[in-house]
Image (cartoon, rainbow, N blue to C red; front, side, top):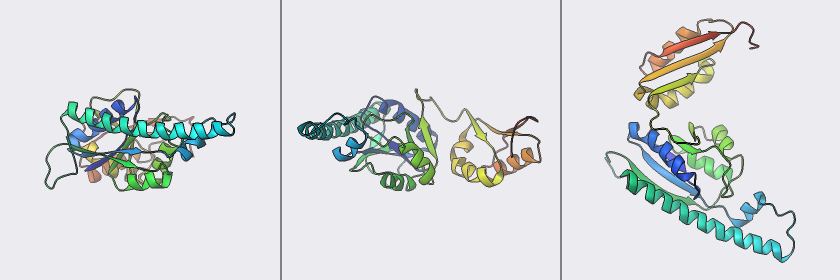
Length: 236
């Protein structure tokens, strides 16, 4: 994982999102691509409550949304610069042979889901907030990127973790559906102090051996594997 796409909106959540991205970047010496999706006023209007606005009022709302978009873009850039300065992260494009953390801020003049997914698909990891942003992004942006980018997504919680490499839990279904996830997460799993593979099933059916084999072959680790036997659980 060399490049982490980090969504910043120009709001109070940027600090937590950036710190979450930093927790992932530190063990990997990764580059942070900090993206602000500027939302055109016409698009932001889709998610604004304009039910009672008519005539000139609609125009005033559209103009205000445009001004807000500029404000959010300015704040997003400022938040990234301030964060990088406090964390000692060099800003700029990734130099050849760079050592240590680097970061870059850039804007995308659209919040179209396909466009954002294309940005995500070109990076190794995506970090963004879980809550709906106030800056006008579509409410299903996170879900769309998870489903369509083909890249692992780290959703920031209410507070940022100090590290992502203490204990990592891998929820296992079967080799067919989980191997790709383990492969994508391998760089972080390899740096973790403890990795737990967990499977909930009616019977073992060789799941423990399957999990151990996958961890050894893809990550080169011997995980703690747990198979929870719940005989009354309704599983296919």
